[in-house]
Length: 159
Image 1: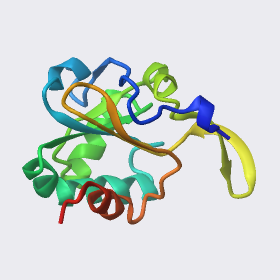
Image 2: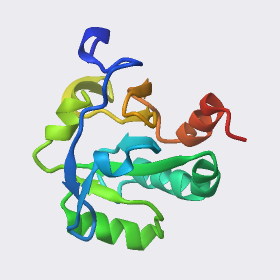
Image 3: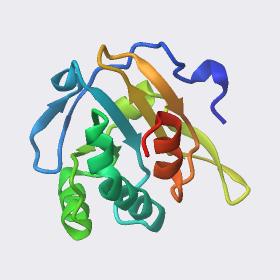
């Protein structure tokens, strides 16, 4: 399991990255300088939990954007699979592809986790709220897919 020492903390500089979106276009974190960003890591497109979480972000996007947040989803899926997922679920925010897990590792969103009582290596469902200057405001590890966006909105004071 990732321990506190292994994790990003509030006040840490958010690791920069450039990844391909679902259309194969490069997207860099620096593109969002001056904006608040919600970066969430999901294990796999088109799986039940990831679909629930993505649809919750989709359904909450207007209120999140009204509060000044841009949402970015990141998975190890290839751009084509993310495109299919985005179209299938009518997702309204970019899905970024990190097949070599470099960004997952930079954010400590990949490693040992407990799944069905076993310790396995994999994507740790995580969300990071970044402020306008690129610092981590709220690091959330091992989040549950169901109810996560509602919980996040509450933490951020968004009705």
